[in-house]
Length: 301
Ligand SMILES: Cc1cc2nc3c(=O)[nH]c(=O)nc-3n(C[C@H](O)[C@H](O)[C@H](O)COP(=O)(O)OP(=O)(O)OC[C@H]3O[C@@H](n4cnc5c(N)ncnc54)[C@H](O)[C@@H]3O)c2cc1C
Image 1 (cartoon, rainbow, N blue to C red):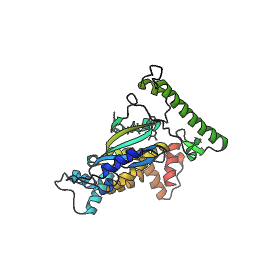
Image 2: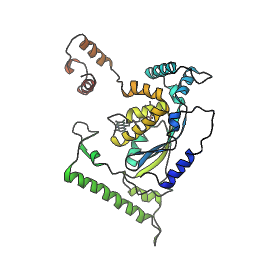
Image 3: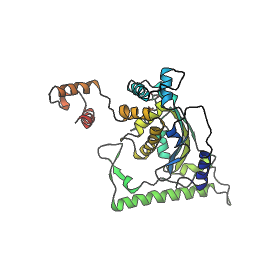
Image 4: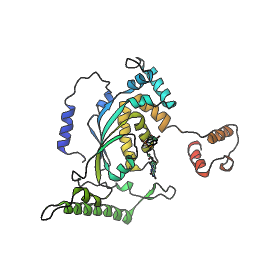
């Protein structure tokens, strides 16, 4: 359970006090505001605030005085054009602020996305909670034999049980030691900023994370992708569901051109043209490396 009853009550009281505003409002995003969407065993994402909607993208692109056109079709066409031609700045006019609770090893991947504003829970100031990410059995997989940066078959039997037991035991032991070092009962008590260094990377941290829609799409493109590590991908998927409701036209264009689309190199275009002309092309005479050829065939057969 990621939220306590008090925290849930706080969120509900915030949601119970709507105020009228002249600002752009996205009905889809209003439904998400403040609510926690659970991710992994103890994590979540919550939308804390947002700015703009689909119309704000159109308005910025046209540098107009109003809220875009009255015709959804025109707005959709323009948004698709902007996405197709990498005209990115209108998408930067929309922003979102999230509260995220995530394991430290996921946070290390996430923080590499520099085009965001972050404020993290201070483990110098506060004591971390006894909450550790323990993978569900179906996520406990062996090292992949084809991809150095991935996982393969799910562990089974005694090995799976042993690994789970080790993860749980080590987390509990490290947290017990953390508490023992912090304790001021009959001793001085080690500083929080030092005691934390003995904690494992599956402990949970929290932050506020604010970014604009262009850079959020970049984040989602990389982290909601099938090649991203499962533990960050599930966060990206939860955010994607909110973005879909927030800016449905922009999200549909993003899904079409970025998530569902592929980029073709000049060599790949040449191979496709030769194939369309009836030629049987092999990797050796494609001009592509083995890796490129494998990725090309994954899409084009
Ligand atoms: C599947 C996968 C595997 C990865 N493996 C590794 C790994 O093994 N080791 C590792 O270290 N990282 C790894 N990364 C992280 C990756 O290299 C990027 O750091 C991360 O995805 C953030 O991307 P970004 O820099 O484009 O995003 P952001 O930091 O959000 O930047 C967005 C864009 O802004 C521009 N930009 C931002 N800051 C600067 C700057 N200071 N200078 C110039 N341009 C800037 C760039 O154009 C950049 O693309 C991996 C990422 C993925 C998705």
